[in-house]
Image: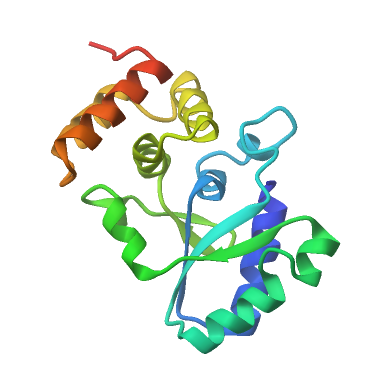
Length: 175
C-alpha cells in the first residue's frame, strides 16, 4: 500500500463517519514511519487493506463503512484497497505506552513501527515476520527494545517465548 492509498482511505472514512479520531494499526501504520515501505520492492507493496480504529463508531456506522469501503466493496474493486475496521479491544494487544508513540500519517494517527513489530511477533504469520525482518534490517526498530517489551507483556509465558523465538528468527539481538 502506498501512502497515497492510505490518505485516500482515511479521507473517505472521515467523510462518511465524521469521527473524532482515526488510528491506523497493522502494516499500513508503517507508512507513518517510512512511506518508502509501500513503494515497489518494499514490504508493504502487496498490502491492500488499512486496519483502522475509529472513535466514535457504532455498529450501524461500522456496517455502512464496511459496505462502502470494506473488502469486496465497489470501492475495493475500483481502487484495489480497502478498510478493515477494528474493535476497541484490539489495543489490549499493544505494548504499554503505545499511545505516547503515535505518529501522524495521512490525516490520522498511526501506531509506531515498534508497536506494529511487537504485535506482529505475537501473531507470527510468515508475512508478519517478513515485515519485522525488514523493520530490523532498516533500523526502524531495535530487537533489544522489542525483546524487553515482549518479556514485560501481560501475555501467557508460552506466548512470550514464542514471540521471542520469532524475534530471533527475524534478526540477531544486539548487545
